Image (cartoon, rainbow, N blue to C red; front, top):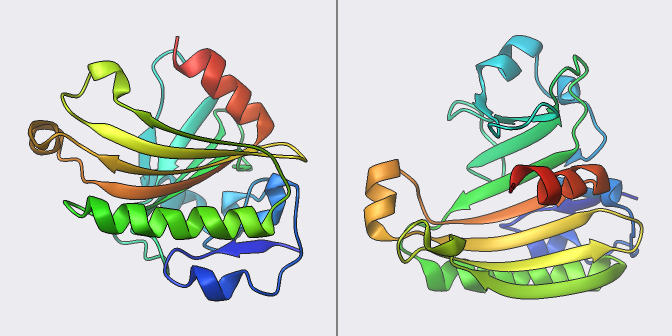
Length: 195
């Protein structure tokens, strides 16, 4: 049974589900890892999304939704697929909800999301930590919780709190982000993207 994640109505979404252990059981906006983006968007719409790519990557590319795409609970979504896959099979996805200059509210919502995931997924490991982006972005900080699922894959929930100078110069916003990542994508991300 698929688990539906809804940042705004989390408490009601999970009450009747059985515990799942596979990343494909987890949904963001009704979309799961392993689905094709073509099940939700036409090819020209996907190609109008913003392209997110790591400079050294020849394996994965991200497609970030544009402001004209409306989701029920998130302001934006990003989907990672293999670069040469015309079927756009999803290996990772992220929902983002703006909480600009509202860190306390973001952390409160993050706590709710974490609790619901703990109650509804079979977890192998949970890690809580803060990350200052190795000081690259001034006083910016992320408050992160990672869940390794017993059936493979990783769910990450985090609040980003960007340094004010960085927010202005890069036009970034503080946000709550929830990502679902296949095992293959997660291994690649941690070995390739951060070289």
